[in-house]
Length: 388
Image (cartoon, one colour):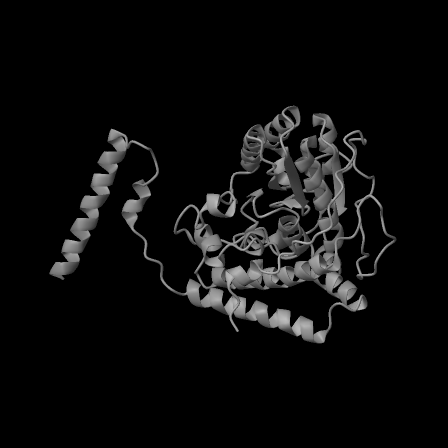
């Protein structure tokens, strides 16, 4: 059984309950405690009227994509160790945020990812090989952003905030109800582009959801060295932007909070800031040694808050998930990983001359000179091979 990228996207529920946008007059400050609908064991907490639970068919699809996403992440990490990827920033432990976010938006909405959102992109239905093209070093972006309404993965911190604000403003200006979802790490909230993006969106009421995945560390810098605020969600009040904080390892709560945030933006009420409290289980990238700045006890404590196990336990208790369904999803995930392995083991064809494509609409004299120099060097190398 082979699971194609399109299969990841299939069964995207179109019968979702219409979300009620938050009252524009509500206080800007978030709840004092992160919104939580399931406890860490997967036991449901008392229902909330402000954040109703998503329909069960959506939660089943959320679970399926989280399992596939985790298996993709594990496979991508293995590909890095095998030398097939230059680098890979794992998002293991952040599955609820990665998948819940893309399920909260429409296919026609725009997503602005960071370098860590590979799992979110495959959950959005983008071919995993195209997603990993950047991290393999073949090309700047392996997919067509305009086709999938997803910007290229962004390595500079927070620059995607400005891009999201500009696109959302332009879409609203043209009378479209497009929402832009900007993924942000906790470290990115210390950057100037975060300020500029959220401030612009607030002033012009651009329909943007700024989604901060607070995984506790900006590489090795702990959150305590990033901010003295009660939480990063409190940054919204300074820009006149309503905000909320959510347990980022509670998949049901993440989807519920983001669904309402998206509805707020789509209704013309301007941007919304969401902070998810989560944790990355792996190192920052394969080039990082996380043991130098965090201890094993901290990692173990967060392992007990596993978002995939949490949702599985809840769905089993509700009687909408059983051993057969879990086995089927696991089989899909293994087939997905096997297909990715096979295609990533194929050596890509790379044309060195493509380095000069898309640099300028009209090549400069210097670029033309450099291009001809490379062309001559390649020709000389071919001649040497022919003489050998």
